[in-house]
Image (cartoon, helix red, strand yellow):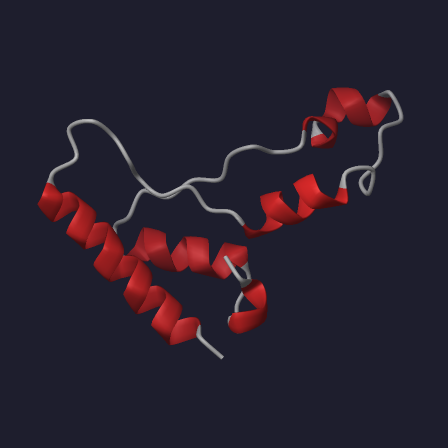
Length: 87
């Protein structure tokens, strides 16, 4: 997500896509965000590019049995949500 072009954050976009019945998710959390690594002293800020990517990324549905109609549904919902939140 290019958040500079949107008037909402990832959480709002995520929730809006869920409301459109699109099974979005968030992946690739920086490892040192997990409590185990926090307890070892790793702090946010050590990998700014990974953190920025994590803050801006949403995983869209993609699977082998996805039909063309399924893909169209995802595209329509993404376009609808992004148009609504566009600055």
